[in-house]
Length: 195
Image 1: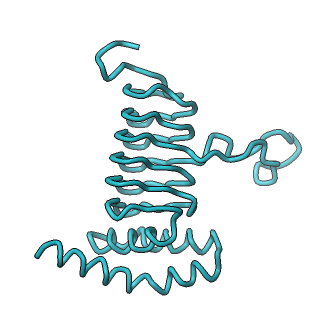
Image 2 (image 1 turned 180 degrees about the vertical axis):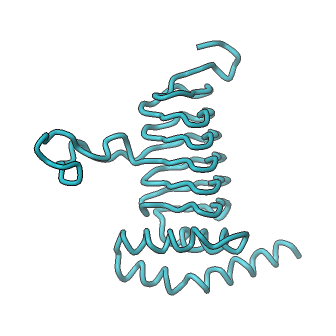
């Protein structure tokens, strides 16, 4: 019975967001996609979770039926893959990336599409008008990883990694480890060995 009711709620959520999905497909506009994401991010409770995921399952590159996104969180780009059992806590902003199976993003996590968001090569230009020095990078967060509150992810996170609260990951680090700091470095191995 519970599964049946959950299916009905998912179907109702899809009906509610269907006009937004259709407009997204017609407009093919990143700013429209972001606006809808921000709008749905502020719908509270379970209803909000169902509405967000109904929209994202049909607009992201790939999104599992078994993913959850809490209040205040949204994707800033549709080039995102979300695999099974991904949990995105409150107030996260997620750019182009692959979120592999069984990962948790704690509250206020930011996943950027690489570490080169803005250029700095022209000293005469304002930061808004700098040429982009590097191409963006589709970050991969590996299976079974746990990203702590207020972490900033700018590089790949290897599978089974714990990223400490407030850490800034600027380069790829080995998996099966706990990382933390600014910039993040290996604190210890999950097998018990010190780094």
